[in-house]
Length: 203
Image (tube, rainbow, N blue to C red; front, side):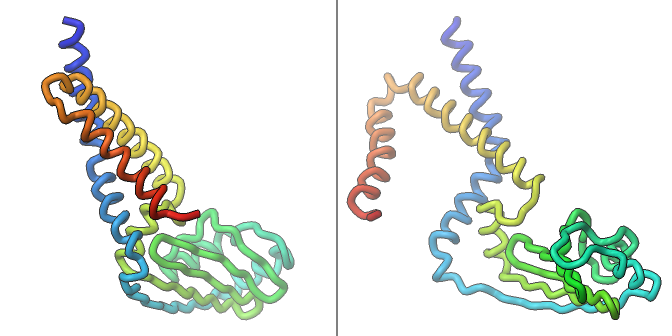
């Protein structure tokens, strides 16, 4: 009875962790291939420039902001106006101030962007570049500039994948007596990367 109970538990944990991590494993497997051949896949680079000008009352608020070297956020009304005009999120973005302008770096998966804001004229210029869908997916794989929510997803996915692998190993152990090739295949799966690292991968 105890053995049947643990077999059911192993199967349940295995399929549940597999269901949770399925899409993540497919994504990471595909982007593992694209990252491995990144030099062979041409980037699809696209650039975009958007400009806006602040009204006089908001320009006046910039004069009261810190001088060079400080990094607080934009004033609330200035931020909201620019977000509306430029269709960009600036909340919680740190600003590099100088005596003539403000600069905000806006990195993102699959591309980069930055905003410059002239403190005297109120002219704002948003420059953005996109390197294409494959670059976007590759950056998701690496967790590059993806934010806290995606970081949490990666952690949860990783735990689910670990549970999936360990319960798979557990199920292999349970059925190994009826399948003689089980441990030979497991050993081969371990030996192959070790051999490749020792023979072909040099420090």
